[in-house]
Length: 265
View 1 (cartoon, one colour):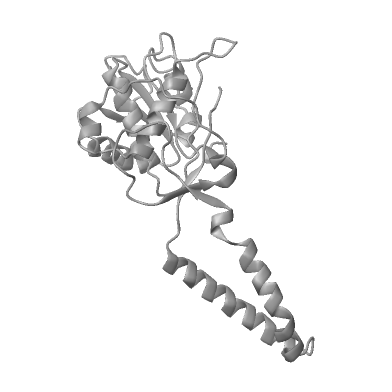
View 2 (cartoon, rainbow, N blue to C red):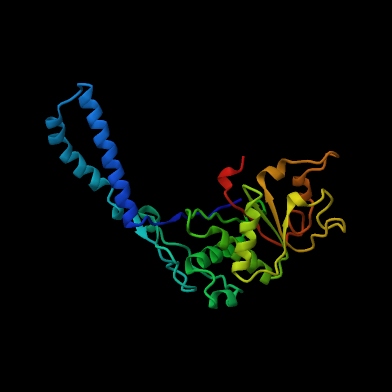
């Protein structure tokens, strides 16, 4: 698997920064008082020596020196993201790849259901998926956005884009079984209510495309724990996915979306 990674995060509001600063000052005062009570220092000397340190600390923690406001530079589609988003200055110094992929979700874009930032991730993912590695495996794309950017809705948009291109079976893996509700909501929010969502842990252990299970199209939602589970007969969920045409077995006809991948063990 090959990855093209980026990391963006929603900025902390000014009141939150001020509350954090006040909390840090209170902790520092409490620590200083405790040292004086134990006879470890002179309050007057400590007061004289802290001014320079505080100025230096404030100078180091200046947000403008660490983060830069983020806006898609190679894509002009979609509405502005509802929250301010930043990226590290080191990433901001790197020019992103040119865009050549054309999306097929015009109705979603015109309705403003995905922001330009989310559409940028979908475009780059689809663009990357068109390539292959030297060993013949398809290229992948890693989304390293922080909390609040809307990775779930971005994944839903990626699934819908693939559905529009005729790819009917998809795999969505996440950390907890309750997150299937969030996946359904994210699909519904972009008017993809007609895309079926199947919770793997609720299905029999038979082949997914068998008459007993009946998964002909849509999204199969699994957790990392489900991949390790097995039935009394020895059948495993992992084998169930690997042998399903269109999901893992040839011919592949959909996307594999892995959320909260740091929880994968």
